[in-house]
Each structure stands twice: as C-alpha cells, then as structure tokens.
Image 1 (cartoon, one colour):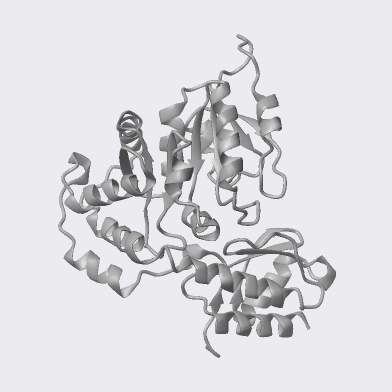
Image 2 (image 1 turned 90 degrees about the vertical axis):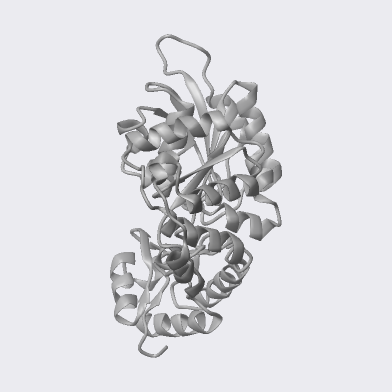
Length: 344
C-alpha cells in the first residue's frame, strides 16, 4: 500500500470483480436494440422483479436513465418540482431543460432531506401563464446532501403529496442500494411509491458501466423510445449486463463495509488539524470543511494527491471522500496518515 494511490475521489472508480470478467466472457449475446440479447433481457427482468415493478430498461448511464424517466413522465414545457441540490440539476449538463425541455420548480434541501410542506406549497394551481406541474423529482441517497438517506416514512409522505396534486414521481436512486443496506428497507418499498426509479451499477456495485430504469410496462415502453432518441440503443450489450447481474447477486450486501469504512474515515478526519466533517455520515460519503487548515480545498486536494490520496473538491473550502470496494479499513487508516502529513 505504501506506493499505491488511495482513491477516495468517488465510488465510480471501482473496477469489475473477477466474477464479472468471467461473466462477460461467458454471456450469451444478441441484438439488444431488437430486445434479442438474452443477458440484457435477464437483467431487465431481474431488476424489475427486485424493485417490484413490471418492467425494466438497461441504459448506458444514470444520466440517460434520468432523462428517460423525465421524458417519459413529462412533456416539453412541463414543470418538475426538484430540490436545489439535486444531481439532475447540478451535474447533468443542463439536460433537464436543454434536452427534456422541462422547467425546474426549486424547493430547498434541509440536511439532505425535503420538507413535505414545502413541496406542497411549491405546487402552483393551473394557470395559462405558468408551466404545468407534472413531476416530483426525488434523490436517494442524496449526493450533495452528504450521502443522506431519505427514510421510507418521509419518502411515502413526499409521494403522497405528489399524488394529492396529480404529479408523477421519479426517484433518482443512483445509490438506492446504499439506502436500502443502511436502513434495512427493501428497495421495492421505495419503488412502490414512485412511477419510475433509476439505479446505477457503475458506482458502489463495481460494474464498468450501466444503469437501469424500472416502472410500469407502459412507461418503460415509452422510455425505450426515449433511449433510442437519445442514442442509447445498444447491440450486444450483454457483456455489460452480465456484470450487472453479478452485482445484483454478489455486491449489494457488502455495501455495509463501505458504510463502516466511511464512518471510520469520518472519525479520523475529525482528528486532523483544521478539518471538520460537515455531513451526517450515513452511507459511503464523507464531506469535510477544510477552511481552518488555512489552505483552499483545491490546493489541499493537490497536496493530498501528491501524498497519494485522491479526493474531490465540492466547494472553495469543502472536499468529498467516498469509500468503495477497493477501500479497506487499513486503506482508510493509511489515507488519514498521509493527509495528516500533507496538512502539516
């Protein structure tokens, strides 16, 4: 470990397992665009079944999955109620309005959670001067909310508000399996309340690429058309789907290790000079304010990188560190040692 970089930049840095490589080699293949790839078909059914939904669709990325969800539930010129820190708003290249043509109606996030009363107040009555409210957009776990988990009771309350006003609900569940493992809540309990749900295979589940969107047969049929419009139809995609099947079978329970290592990391970061952990560490993310080190976040991240630790910069004085399959408890301890030395 002495010469190895400890990569805490993101759980997107994970590499496939040996079982995934073997599954890729052996996967039966066909033309997925014609729904003739048996491995993709198996993954889509498995994903839908695990979420208690009728159908699923394999897509190249979570961003495409989110677009498929939005464009299947809302029309051009409609409005989506979305929190001001949502990944879809911050990090997906403005696709909400530039591609889907949907206007955002912002509500604030409070320590990673939405307030049902504020969501209710944000739904405007029908008015020819205003975009039509159509979708409530949820995210769980919440990235900019510190990897925070929305508990199932609050999730149900938020979805009930949406139904009161005739809104559809999409759940950006890129890390929904982390939420499930952290709380013991089955993913199907979250999925039962929403129209569409996306989850990602290429983060903590260690796949090289891919996400799935699940929903009713009607909605997924529409999402399949959207995927084609976005250029996401694939051919022998079973080589990727094979990895995702292994992930669902072998990689979910072990997310608890990532959560434990994140808690361990948070404790050690709190002992470093000038570093303050600023999020509730519920899953695999740790956010820290480094203002009191006297070094800006970007410069400090460069110091850490030179010392063999990669982190991401989230603001002028804030950084994010994410644990994943390649980060052991020993790696956490070594990372803390290197960061302590880099701070000085």
